[in-house]
Image (cartoon, rainbow, N blue to C red; front, side, top):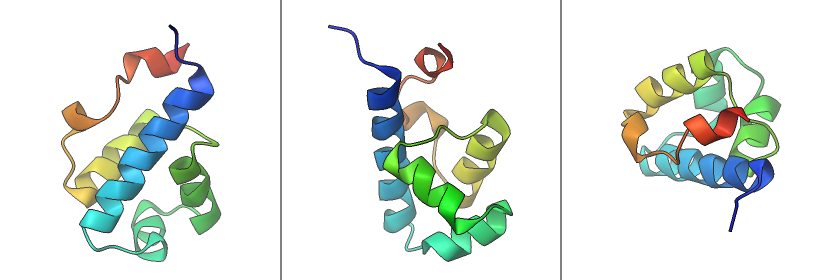
Length: 78
């Protein structure tokens, strides 16, 4: 069974949201550090949009998140 791009985006967004919450950080604080609007971060966390690789990298640094625990990212590029 294949997983759609939307489903993979939702899984990635949920993982990022869980990591942010576990780090005890608010959306506003993380968005400010990323220098992106809160609305964009909200869309990423809901799986409506996939972050760029540079944004995802910075997000992992902010959240102290090992990228290896994220869903398979190579599949996200199709």
